[in-house]
Image 1 (cartoon, rainbow, N blue to C red):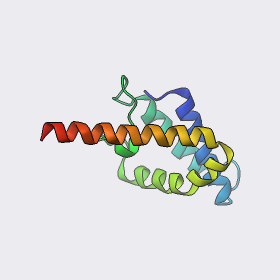
Image 2 (cartoon, rainbow, N blue to C red; image 1 turned 90 degrees about the vertical axis):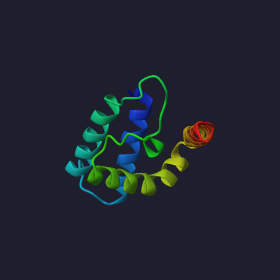
Image 3 (tube, rainbow, N blue to C red; image 1 turned 60 degrees about the horizontal axis):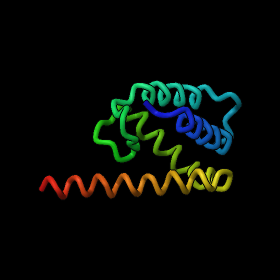
Length: 110
């Protein structure tokens, strides 16, 4: 299960995307995307360890939602950084650590 702060970040990023795409507020498609992502995050099978969806081996999202959330993240990540640089940097560092851990696990198995 993802933390409330992670879900809050997701909501902020979808909001940045929605406003940037000049959607009428509130946008039903973006609200539906957030509801879907929140539901999937709350039922994440990686309760113990923090796993980023982008590097997870278990894909909870269906293909359509996975592509849409990638589009949202690509658009809003730079803009989110301008609003919340510390949060963005700590997230990026944690992502790099997780990728390194995953790579070390794979090399130890081989």
